[in-house]
Amino acid sequence: MQRVPHDVLPPDPFADDPDDPAREVAGMDDDVTEPITADERTELLADLSDLAVYQALLAPRGVRGIVVDCGECDQPHYHDWQLLRASLEQLLNDGRMRPHEPAFDPNPADYVSWDYCRGFADGVTTTESAY
Image 1 (spheres, helix red, strand yellow):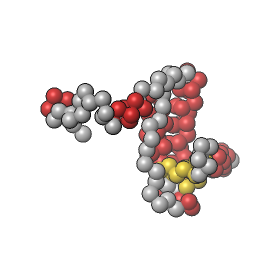
Image 2: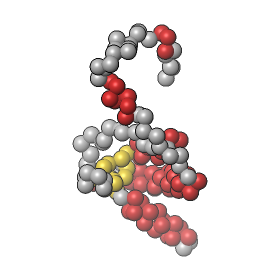
Image 3: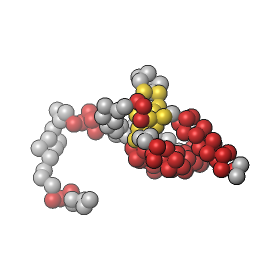
C-alpha cells in the first residue's frame, strides 16, 4: 500500500470550522495512554508466541480463532487468528488496541477459548514427550 502525501489530498472542507462534527471523533484519539511496562511487554510477546503455536495446532483442525468473553458488554467476541495477532501487535507497539470490526456472523463452533488452546497445546506436548 502506497501512502499519499498530505499536500496531494484535497483541502479539508471543514478546516477551521468550529462546528466541524469530526472534532468529537478526533478528540477521542487524544486519550493519553501509559506506555506498556516491561512485564506487560514480556507477557504480550509470550501471548504472541503462544498464539502462533495454537494456530499451528488448531487451524488445520478447522478452528478459526479464539473466543473471548467481554467483561464490558457480557458478549462473546470472536477473533480470527490474524485479527487477534494484529490486535496484540498493535497493543505491543502502540500501548492500546483500536476498535475493529467483529467477525461477521461467526459460527461459535469454529472458535475456542484461550484456556482450551493452552490445554490442547499442553496435551500435544505431553503426548509427544512420552515417545
